[in-house]
Length: 243
Ligand SMILES: C[S@@+](CC[C@H](N)C(=O)[O-])C[C@H]1O[C@@H](n2cnc3c(N)ncnc32)[C@H](O)[C@@H]1O
Image (tube, rainbow, N blue to C red; front, side, top):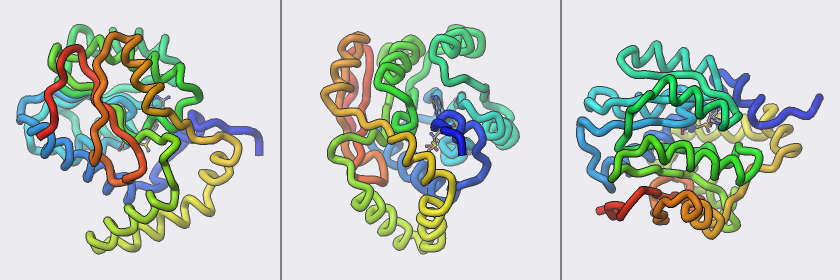
């Protein structure tokens, strides 16, 4: 098999580990709603939206959602499920995405911009900083750029699998957990992860990037299901603390 990167892996994906991804994204949205008291008219831009699980979780709550992803199949699914929202295709090149966002979003600003479970699939830290710089322009003055589910030196696959297992057990979804584990072990995900290590980014590196991009940065625990990963809330000014 030729060397395939995470970008090509994701561009080709269809419904690989939907059940667990949907559960994890649903958990994140619940925590976001609780911690930040999301309001019905809050605007949200989901960068790397996947099949649209954030939009699915917020359906009927009157949030105005936009989303972008590198996978055309996912974008079609988002458009089909949420015809009222704006979903569009982006690339893995941040400079190209700058132009795409300018065309698609024009002068829109958002209360929340989400980068959820994306960082580990980027090739280098440099891309993350470019994404921060790009997305910062689309934030409302009090808006929050949430970079969540970041792997770092404290991340442990075993601890993450355990927290996922406990959640699936509580939700009566052991089948989803087993499906996920067998997917990780027996699909091309395993092969690709041997060839391309998932990107780990330390807290200090995130703070340094935010500073260079003139963004404030706060580490917020508990936003995601996988407890050994980190979450950061970036903003232009004093970021409202979670409740
Ligand atoms: C694990 S999924 C997470 C999807 C969604 N954020 C969620 O949490 O439900 C990872 C997503 O990142 C997208 N992705 C991968 N590389 C990307 C990149 N360089 N820029 C933007 N999105 C990317 C994939 O297409 C995929 O939809």
